[in-house]
Length: 333
Image (cartoon, rainbow, N blue to C red):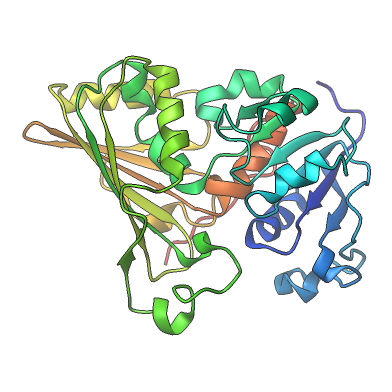
């Protein structure tokens, strides 16, 4: 699609972490103009009242209305709120929608509403890029789900997983959202770690859904242990599975699968989290110990795990270069 003018972009639920990241990206996006940023609790305030680093944005305030016109609307509401918003027909049906909540990620969820607005495509570009390009509505993947899937897609595309997969992954405190809880206060989180939702994390459902899309015969288990980390942002996951595949061959599969995907890099040496923090990249490392294949996967939970991936999806939906506006700098030290 050739755009004669910039896209008009709206954000609903503009006060949270994901909305803040969206704003930081979209303000510098060459093909996007921010039409409105909605926040019921902050209506009338400047963006910098919440996102203090945006002090240089002088001419934009939060609005209360949601029924404003835009070419694309990002829904950054809490889980369950996107469904309520669309059910009430509070936004124009002609706008394309990218939802950052979990409301539409699973195919069986809210089928009545999907029929009303058109189906929501699962927005993992490395899995569904061609479908996303022709979609009206996209359900943006979860942060853990993104990191874990990118560590497994090449193996499942080759039907190579015949055993249970074991996963441990650590996320930064921003993964818990902006609302304070007993486990997100600095005094609790600092110099501390903990396991939560062991084996039952909600992102497992969407991960399994995608893996079965690639390999319908998969009937083993994903054993996932998530950790709360004592850092601000990023996810590092270690996945391991029994496999007869030589490590050199497995690395070839990963390199070939991601050859045409601009935001996934397969490293030939061990990786660390700072290489991807503040970027839309996923970095992977594949190794093997005896009969066990190991994959390390790293992303920034707020960018590739949320807002950056949402902009990547917007680019695909409107025929733009997939990487447009996402040339972001990592953290070296």
